Length: 285
Length: 204
Image 1: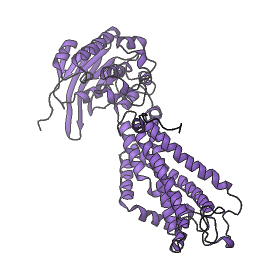
Image 2 (image 1 turned 90 degrees about the vertical axis):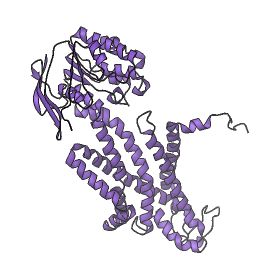
Image 3 (image 1 turned 180 degrees about the vertical axis):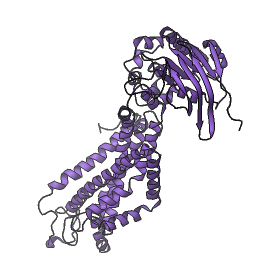
Image 4 (image 1 turned 135 degrees about the vertical axis):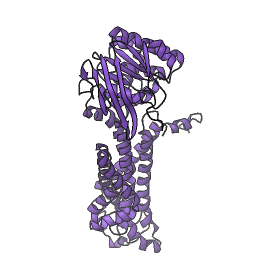
């Protein structure tokens, strides 16, 4: 084949370039996200409806991933569910990032504020993650709002700690002292020293939180505290598939499970690559 | 020109400075030595107005020094020990030099700063080059006193000598006083008209 890869290409060296790695993971993750979000609204009318004539069909040309016991097409349903999960995940991860940034920066405003944020962070980290998530979702009465609030209130501590640490490190650095001595205002310092350093960390933090958000959203929906059961969602599909797996209908569980895993994994790797990249240039983290 | 009277400062219950008096005349190069943890850096920061003393005052040309006001670079500038930590690692050299105001070509030439460094990041310069950049940005038209805290301690002897020669030449022409903080008494005796040393304040 003429398109064969030249074996002398220095592949390992290219893999070690963190910027390239982040770009590659980013393209994959964003392409997946874009495909899901763009394709879901294009589903034909009635693609999600019940069809008594086509119950529990294995994969065939008309239904590429088969149908469930109510005769709903699994491919269409998985796509719609992924789109819903991704939207909820983006919202929840965004809200969580916002909480992390606000709390992390608030900690730089004085010793008392720092103490309060520190205690809050320790408290949130000390409680079992999923238990807290269930409690908040339950207290909010379940539903999409419950999921978003629960994820937003449980995923901030890691990023908030990074924010707090970085902001304090910069605020007390020699170069900020020099900028101040050269007559630069606090606002100028925030814009020119703090923001360029923190914005990449915030973006990386958001991307790292996102897969956790969609996995936990699926977890909550699975136990019935998440997205309303009449809406297609990965968690609801997985819990419905429990009965069908025993009847040998593996495709009902495989499609949503693999779809969720693929998206979560793509963003997890993208987030990790970005996190490594967001240190100052030349830093070996 | 600079007069410090009866400066005292404590961190918690550790007395760092205790009743320090100091006079520096215009354009004078004064050395400051003494063993570690005797308050050399603290004194430097107090004289630059970055730290407020518990007691006593620092007068520069008759007015009290304090934190710089927005838009008015402080007349006394403090150059910290490690230039790697004293420049924002994300800023290109061009931005570091223009931190206070547009860089002065005479300063750049005197300190041997090359145009080709402009687009490099601090990590892409050598220690000596970065030390020059770090110093150059502190020069502004109203600079009266430059406090250099061990700025050459990470450089080899030749580079030390070149940098301090360039610096002292420049400050001499501009009548800027220099307080040279250094452990190295040979270095101080070569560049400073007089030298003072701090003693330990506590014997714990």
